[in-house]
Image (tube, rainbow over all chains, first blue to last red; front, top):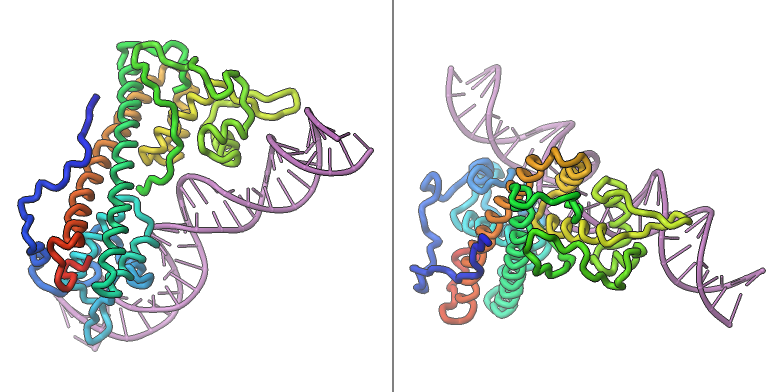
Length: 156
Length: 156
DNA sequence: TAAGACCTTGGAGTGCACTCCAGGCAAGCG
DNA sequence: CGCTTGCCTGGAGTGCACTCCAAGGTCTTA
């Protein structure tokens, strides 16, 4: 039934306290133009500016002429936001999380709660998807000729 | 993608060649008003009418006064559509599938191809979600106090 | 120094999937 | 009979997440 497995928590080779925020970036620099970041993240430059405007990005550095210069830290944040986005979290909630981060260390419990709620959502969505997979596989097998669905009785 | 909301549907344990399109429905009848169907599917009456309008539903029977009377077959179809919706398939694609069904048996290969493509999407989405789970678990573990992230270096 | 690619802004526009509204018909009840 | 509840229609409105535009400044390469 083509199961893809649920919720294995991370393989975790790096379980140390040190995170990996310093890993090498595209150009090896710490200054990226908006189009470089767009290419790297897959987001459009429009979207990156929009993220900043709505408070989903910390304030991005500017060159002396006012152009954005993204740092590696910004890229890390964007990568994380990309993960949150994949979970289906609404942008408004991501903004809320960003606000918590900006508010300082005393928001740790709130942030943890938010991520845990998200985690539960993800778990549920995975379960739903696996359920659809079962249905899909069944339908596909009927179309595969093993069992021609006379008259499309289920309507599908 | 952002798949939102559910619409819990029948468990459907029968996996034989015989489909289960005749199993007992809420009231045991074969005639349901739009509000009964809305309650049962979790969709709004508005949405059900809209589905019919855009061609996502086969033509629904009407009472002598023109009110919709949904059949068990309609409910089956709706349950399947709910599954497709959970996969994140755009409504336009579901309509396309519905058109194939209406076109007759010679569209089996197309339908199969469509479902197989969807299946692959689902597999990929599950993989993505499991990936986000890894990230989420790691973040949560840092907030859990085992290892307070000094200075929020990763930005999260 | 000039062309052309790239960046800036606020605000307007887009596409999707609903969601609601106005105005009206129909059935059941006291 | 009037009242309430439920349903009908076409079309307009909503919320989200972008996406694009106009008008202009900047950077790079020839």
